[in-house]
Each structure stands twice: as structure tokens, then as C-alpha cells.
Amino acid sequence: MSYIRYYVMQSKPGDMAQLNKALVALKAAVAVQPGLLSVNMYKDLEDAEKVHFVEHWDGKESHDKGAKALPDAVVSPMGALMGAPPVRYTLSEI
Image (cartoon, rainbow, N blue to C red):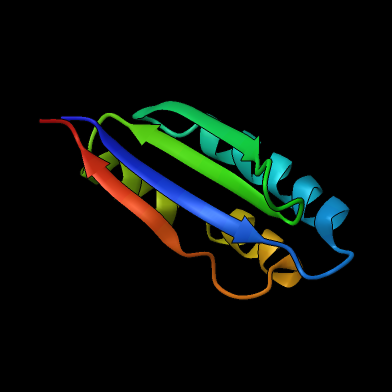
């Protein structure tokens, strides 16, 4: 059953370029994890300092294993964020 994590990340004022760079690196690191079906980044059209980061996994177990394999990549964008990125949605296929 597929599993989706949807994060909304807001940069600190003036740090959008740093956040984008860190998220591109995170996306590349996540993209090679077993069980990942897709990973996408979207700019927010209503707030120029927000990025939406969406991971689509083949299941929660794959996500959990992938997250444990990426601690350094996950920490990388944190310095450019206003705070911890909220998980907007965690979805599972019906």
C-alpha cells in the first residue's frame, strides 16, 4: 500500500536559495532509496518563501528505512528553515 509524506518548508527570510540548494541535495539522496516511487519539489505560488516536498513510497516500512538511511541529508536543509518542517499530510492508499 503506497505511503505519501507531504512537507511544507518555509525558508528564513533571505535564505530561499540556500533552502532550495539543500532540498535539491535531499531530493537526490531520497530518490535512490529502495521503495521510493517518486519525490517532487514545488514552489508555493502564494508564498515565495515556501517549498512543498512530496515523497511517494511503496509503503510506510520503506519510508521508515529510507529516513533512517538519510540522517545527514535530512539535517542539511534545517539551517535555512524557519522551524521544523510540518508534515502537512501523511497519506496511505485506500
